[in-house]
Image 1 (cartoon, rainbow, N blue to C red):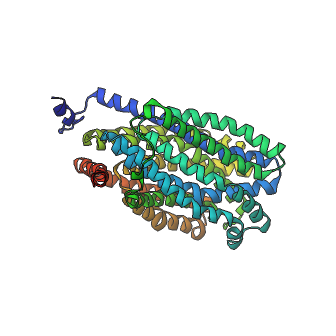
Image 2: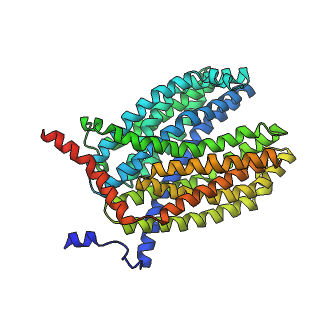
Image 3: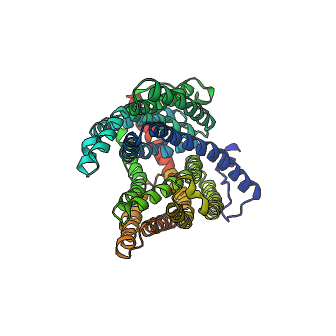
Length: 479
């Protein structure tokens, strides 16, 4: 009798859904998204706090730290986030299928792969100064950024371990401990920065070391929690050699996951770099940087919803409830559309005063006000593509997502932005319009894929993925 009840879909095939089911799904997603938004914001604040402390040391240290932080984000942190997001698929679907012990195996496997990837990334960071000089950056700023990046190297290893544990806990809907550890770490980071930057005599190097210490503290807190908490008793059963089995299967999903996320992040950074080639580059670069910073902060809300989507979709597909996964997607799209309208309205209403938070120059404030209208449109589309990307991660469509992002940004959006900015002479507005076109194309591609999805087939794929990883292990133990 219980087995028959489990097989019964959450939504009847004729598509009739009760209000109670919809309300329950909304509650689940908001309870997941809230802490995830907090964690994402707090982790972003770590880098911002370090740069703020360095800013009190002078213009050159600030320029070097800012450039090194951007370089590290593009070449390292974004890759770790992308590769770690493969756990959204593996851990989420295994948890839904009640194969709890596999989550610990996937966690160890992910840490092994990501830590290996950190080695060549460390070599790149160690040569940051030479790389920046090769691309024509100012020698003094390049030297300062290179020094900062070298002291930032321990951070990438901590960040890899942290990302793996965050995804591991997310898949179990266990998000409150992540929020608490991130909050404690951020408060501690202020004190560590003060000591290492001003009291130790290390200057900007101390800020870079503070990043590493804080990320290691956060990673260790989560690692200890996973190993001692009763809530992780079923999912963490200790270290096992089984983690080294099927490593390439994880890599085959981790690489397109990284490409999918990095292609999007790199395109935004590219727009800021291209703004330096426009007439009046100081104004254009300043305004585009303000827009990118504003966009990044506001984006944390749909990013939290995206994380909740990947968890809900992967859990339901792993549990063999395809129609429940479909309901999760429908609900989150409605939520993010509403959020986009509200956030867009706030951006438009505050467009005349927001620029004063960054500058007292009237031309900068006026230009930022004009860009806020474009920013509101881009945020609405960015939120929509974000939750659809979360659906892709939950289903294991990372390869499809990577191709969609490649086409949307590099074959459509960036060429349109360059044409509008440099041929039609629209300037920074043209570059950001290119981003809007890219986001529209990306959201359209992902929406078409989602609408054409056979959810029963996706549930079958999830079952094959989960149990396909278990069979070789059992066979090897029998032999």
